[in-house]
Image (cartoon, rainbow, N blue to C red; front, side, top):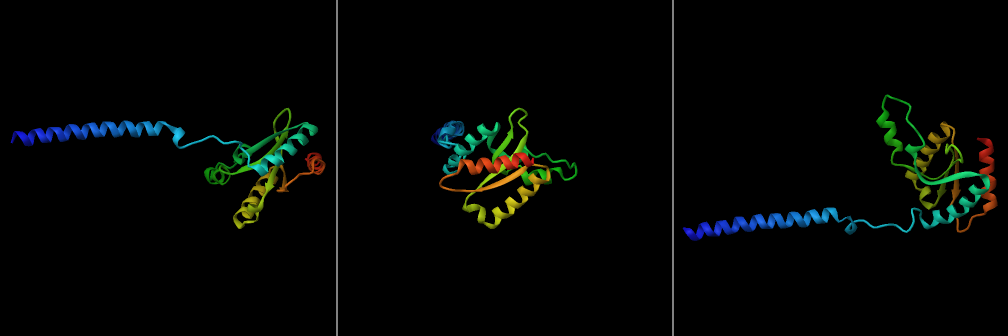
Length: 167
């Protein structure tokens, strides 16, 4: 009988130690985010970075400020109190590739999308149509630039100057 009691005590102690040990290991894994996350080389894709470098120079020449990967909900506010969340949810997880703002006020003026082949998909066409309608309805200019191997700075500058003059 004593052997059974000792065996039960050993099993209970072992179970407690296993629970404590696995809990600490699990806790360490939860807090060691370096095992599940890593940094990126750039916030832009290679294609976006190539366009950004040209666009950046154009923006300096035109005295405007350039931002990248701007969340639509940060430049568009929902006016309607009714169904606020429904309208907000339509824009909160979408972003614009590039937004050009007034240098002094940082008010958005023109939104640029760099269109790669993914913009030919049905879902992207619908997304682009929706975002274009939202942005233009509140007065922002929208320009879609086809993704290219090389960009003509003068052509982009001309297109932006025209959009800025029309704004």
